[in-house]
Image 1: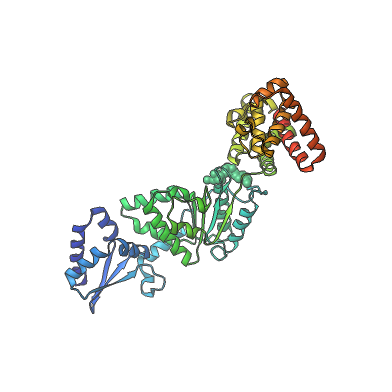
Image 2: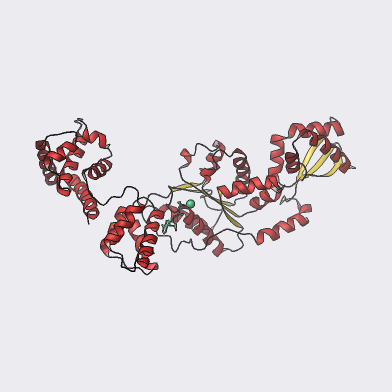
Length: 446
Ligand code: ADP
Ligand code: MG
């Protein structure tokens, strides 16, 4: 009997909804019983129930009331609710268990902790990652949110954490997924009427790793389902690890309630690689590839390629390719050629423009101010330093140097060089700055 009632309700609901919504949200519901004015419905999971309550409550209520009268209330049973003993032998549960046991984790075993080089820029993130692998879900680092710019090792680190969790406990049901793949899986589950298994698949995990959550930007429905999955896993003390190319406070295209949850656990940054780390990574990669580079070239590359590690790898791969094709050793000339092709602003000439840019950057001012008439102390100093290096590292005459700095006189340049020399003698911090910059220009001019 209750089936008939429910079918009648469904017929009413069907008229109100688009076919796809109906198929997605109502078809999977079964009626279990109807007694004492209570209609009990079985829904595939908690998410379903919440979604229906949020979006279709009115339609559902109206139809039930029309068929069964005003006093009727609706009760839900969730298919694989763990407390529901009766349901635990349910076929569906059994099937799910089977499915998740042979779950594809999508982990790339080439990305592990062993080949993830540590340094000042990533130590904290590595340690946080390692510490959750011992007790996934049970540390304060849940969720663990890793953020950093492109090519800085987020994806590598996520896989390393995943691989480590799996190798200490192969039973841990774990999935690595990019937010784009998550989105397209979600959309096709709507199309194919498999939303139920989509959500179940994720809600049954022990560890969920989602890469590049910034791509959820503007995808409200996907964010919403992710939010539910997130809550479900979090409530059940399951581990969540996410990455993003920016810090949570800059994730303004994402729903606030979602971003605020990202901050519940630990947020760590993968910083731009520092010189020492870049050098370590470079040495490691060339050693693995049986390539020999002189110390000079190693320094040159580590210095020049300061954007991110992917770019550094790109340079190494190109160098290997060139040396194989041209059957020649990798010398400095080849290195410079390769770098100038790959690194955008690379130009092997040291010219006044390059010096102005480098010095302005170092002193955190703009190049324009350097050429202006501004007499603020820090700008005057930066201007003088740039003039000093222009004299040292280019063949321009004093007059020409002066011209490049907003048409100043050659005597201004002489004065600048003297001032810089004086400060080098009297000011330790300043001396160090000059040495830093000098090293950069020297390496560049090799
Ligand atoms: P992201 O996901 O942040 O854009 P990836 O994880 O894809 O960056 O890293 C880019 C490349 O650099 C990958 O090939 C990765 O193996 C390598 N890489 C990044 N960080 C390190 C590191 N600390 N040690 C070794 N290789 C690294
Ligand atoms: Mg990545």
